[in-house]
Image (tube, rainbow, N blue to C red):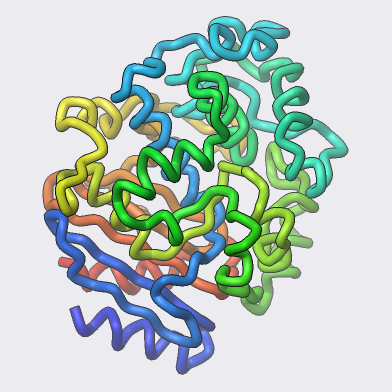
Length: 347
């Protein structure tokens, strides 16, 4: 896998990227742990929606523990959420972006995003855009609070604590895999920079469906200490080797730790909902909390994972035993060209 190191070195030397981490596990063994630029392999990197898979994995582990089930009504744990026609919404609906609450309330600020209780109250009081479970639409921010509050109500603990206790500590990555970053660890988080053209792209986009433009992540957002420290579990902050290790432990044992049984892994990663995204208009297929296919746009049914709007990505493949993660310090708005260059090198 020396070609991976050479590729990311070239990307940084050419100025396309400023710092890159790549990690690959195969059948539970770390086979690539590469970095380029002034970025330590252990440095957590804010990686936007690539972190949704971390939140989903917390939910799957709680299902394995019997704390809830995929068909648990959200309102049975969180009664306030049942308001305005959402009483039938289930954990499965939240994992497949079919709850029907894809938008944060108008007027939400970044400071509001850091207020867990306030965001949960606002989302619980939202009226669904469609009957839960009947349509899908990317819940770009609300995904995190819906599932995170389900986790809190089921366990009595914040989702970041459950992540640490149930996943990160058993896998030996408690200082590299975060949703909310502990304040004493903030100085270890990598500093992001914006790719040229990000500002123009944001200006041209207008409001992203469900997320006002002012709340769309960019490098400044991902560098804010209040954002990094808050539980905003639609995104995450981690090293590539930590999130790759998590995916590897979904596929099988990693140093004696396996997160899910084969039966539950099959259920969690099978296609669970296919439809037209009601916000963006494209066809989508969701597993339970993971996108199907590889982050380069290819769609082997054995692959599942998530990409971030910043260009980060992580996925696993059940047929090959491969787990891959890319994190980067250059925030490239919607640009997945780096991961597109790397994935052919895995075969």
